[in-house]
Length: 614
Image (cartoon, rainbow, N blue to C red; front, side, top):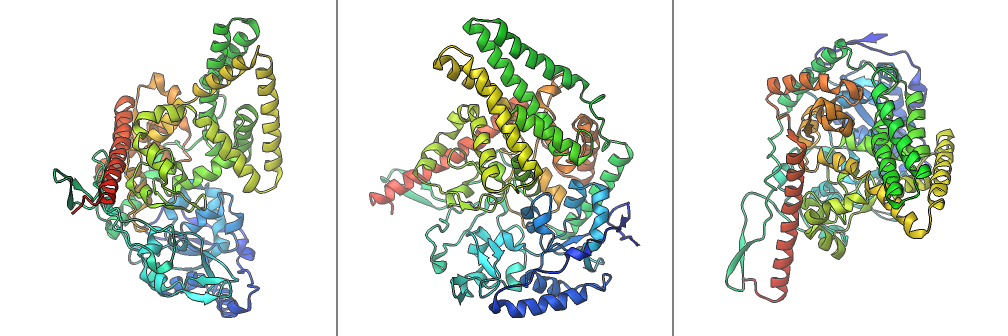
């Protein structure tokens, strides 16, 4: 059947997949959760009527009962059983439980995939008013645990959990300890809770945790304390001036922006900008460039015996890897052939077999980055403690919902962040080694043991075989270490390019009511450059358009960006773009501002320890 909804998108969603066989909720093995199982059975019977309007209060209760309900085009999807099978990862689903994920789903899925959502439909929401989202339990640091007394377990202390009195005061004792009680009140969104860096956090004394947040308020007003009777030190932190102040969330305005964004998508589709050009067109010049760089690296290696010649070989090998990074990025977004299987094969050969990294790790990490861009607790791409902190939020021992661990702001972090603006480029020069660590950690601990795992593992064996033989052929360990370092340091511009798009942008949490398009424009910026130098940036200079439409192939981004700029003018939203030099200055400015605030806090703490504050 075909269902159309007004004010959503131009194309009807056609449901043709019997995916509903996956909808039955898992049966709890715990006797303590028998009532939850009963409610799930009742929920299963309700799924027969897929056109029924489900009240928001019922949605909240069903989420409390353990269902992963997501809104798509006013339809309620039950992804409880599908979440573990989701190719984009379970965490991507959990971040949108109780929320309208229409724009996100349209942005990251093909129309063929979206036709399959019909099997997951269990009802509808009232479309007469913009849907008011609920807070996903993952944002509260909560995950399902059928063995607990309440059906929920807190895996980490998030800021929302610390702010929520209902969760903090209503813990129920179970056999294994204290378990939180998830309430409807806790699921109500607190929009703009951290607007304009106003992180007025509470200590979590009641929960008894040692990793509780310190009070680093950064509101507009600040109180001062005198040190040595001479200088006033403002204890309250201020927002970094490089980052624009954010506007208060208005649900109707966000809904209007979403509708206009969907119209923009239709314009881009009609212009053919989502069509992948393939190898023979868009990548002809790139393939020639890869061949030249690889040939120069091999030529200097095999036909030069001088140190200078081997240095040139290492430089060209690093430049080859640098350029291939963009190809792997395109493949990970299915932007080369437009076919997921073929692009994944290409990306794995490039990333694993030639580059020694893991495409699957990158996809797992990158999917989350695109969905929760610049969120200090959720986006792994800005979680670089102990080396970098782009917000004072990181002073609070934040819990990472991606890495499943606390990011401690300890003594070493304090020392590094104080000088982060001075060592920024030095640290990034060695960032490829961190990619190795992340890739291999993911393969060892998280990646499913399937055919792609075997293919990636074989690729890494192949990489270290050929690269190891390359190093072994050099004369002496000093030459080998030098070749290794030079080839890896030459790749460092890609790390500068990656963080440039986001480090100088907002990290505020505006709550689940902020639209997808507003969030991406608020947290992302472009780099202005001429067309002849675009190959050096590999598409990363047009990150605004890429984040809004990640399935648009790289070589179509410039044309698409012109229409995106028109959209921003019509909607009166900032389209941030700076030159490469200015962008780097802004990033360094943010790093210095945060570093200065660390130094300030250290100075205050030392003065307090001496009893000089009064």
